[in-house]
Image (tube, rainbow, N blue to C red; front, side, top):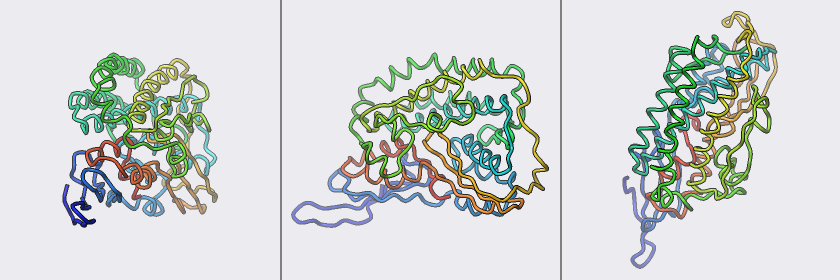
Amino acid sequence: MEIISEKKKGGSSRELELYFGPQHLGMIGNFSITLNVRGDRIVRAEANPGYLHRGFEKLMEGRSWIQNFPLVCRVNVIEPGSMEMVYSTAVENLAGVKVPPRGKYIRCIYLELSRIASHLFGLWAYSKTLGFETVGGWAMYHRDLILDLFEELTGGRVYNIYIWPGGVRRDLPEGFEERTKDVLHEIGEKVPDYNQTFFENRLFHERARGVGVVSREEAMNTGGTGQVLRATGLEYDIRKVEPYGVYDEIDWDVPTREDGDAYSRIMVVRDEMIESVHAIFKLFDKLPGGPVYNKIPNPFKWNIPEGETYVRLESSRGELGLYLASDGGRKPYRAHFRTPSYPHGLTILEKALAGESISDTGNIMISLYVTAPEIDR
């Protein structure tokens, strides 16, 4: 943290301008925040998301429909599965491509595994920011177990490009269901330790309760979504509001809390991980046979009819949207993402930091689930 300047406000009181990040351990990627503070209290904050993986949307206009997959995956490095899904669905809407039932079920299984992996990564970052190194180690280990499953599916651990227009690239390997259940059981058996060591720990409660409060009205007025909304008691999830895939064919709940603070947001994340595990078991129980994709034309000579579409889904961070337009050619005419980190990391973060302690800057930021590449696209 670097002192940029100081302003005397009369008497012994003075206001300091501090630069928080981007190398700070509580910071995300190249993100940084300019803080105006008096004592250890933040008077106002100005977020600077930096330049990281920028220009995705313009680059997409120069690449074929299929060549854009490696780009869209990098909009959210932590959870590329949701980016694959929103882009594939938009292309399918424009081209009139349908997904077979088995392909839909496998997509949802893959998306829920991606959600758990993303939440575990978030728990690693948050727990380490508060000094819970052991919990961070557990979370990263369990995330690696899920990445092992992704590697088995596609050969890639982070960028998988498994969801494809028309379904998924290939069927599940033999024995994949059993191995996935084994991993989920191993994670589930550790939940009591997570609870005792972190979620029920007095230190976590003292650091997170009443910190970074975002009311329901503020969240709705500033574009908040995902855990930011559900932590205020609003039961809002795109998977329920506008079901896609097969989410309307299984029973599952939308976890909520009431206080809108960092504690509530992290507890919603914990509850969502547990709910995702249950959902995967239910999806496997109803998994039908048949093909996993419908054949599409030669992807490098694919002229998609003229038109436009808007698709939204529930990523691990909240509502993710994509506007995609075609002029009848072999590449998109326009593409524009609506990412949850944009309002969370700019407008909401700046408001939530005002009046808080300097030491809670990283605490609040990570509880808002900000991913820097989602902002400067």
